[in-house]
Length: 320
Image (tube, rainbow, N blue to C red; front, side, top):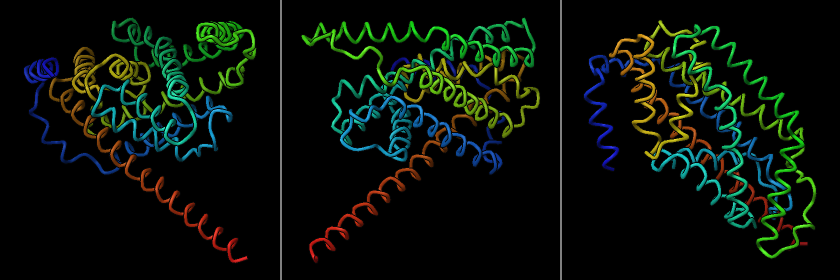
């Protein structure tokens, strides 16, 4: 809490609040776009997460709507806790409460996703550095970011056998340490085939595109005309770094500080940079809350309908 207070005090001394009155005039279409993009980001995350769920891990198939809802819940929690704890803890707890999966297995499955995000981040962050250092313009940096992600896909394709060998070695080592028969483990885990790995990476790229689009929304909302759309393609790792490395709830202060510094570095006025980070935070909170609320309603409505259908079927069966 002391660290948060220091950041807030520092931020108040640097930010220019003269334009914050414009927050009340953010266009409705910007709010709707932020909500839709957030919902799609969570859906892509849920689809990627489902890739790692082995049918033998659960006592019944977990519907995509349920996984989508769990991701939305984790987003809400990550606004109250450090993002890694909120994202991983809530999803692992949701898996153990809705299936026969052990806590250790659930924690393992939810920890795979961040590895793909970290890999994609590592591919693009050199381009971000080049952009901010002035070594290339935004359009060139955007093209380099796209090229880096294509190279990333090629690398995964070619080093896939090494990834599988490493995973098998770790599984056997863990089995031996736990007293099990390490040599009896399957040679290739079913979730680690090349197609699944590349699909997961493709979904990671799609999710990054949605992150970039959501970054452009507050820029449009507060009319920062000096920033082209290509700027956000290369600068997206600023947001990712804030969420990967921070210990503050929702990356509060770290996200704002990172973007304020970046915008000032590229010549955006202090008032406009402050307005951007404030609008971004407001839109994120609104989008997370609305997405989680709607998905929660759908989640419990689905269970209510399923329970009603079950009781109807049971009643018909007993009547016979």
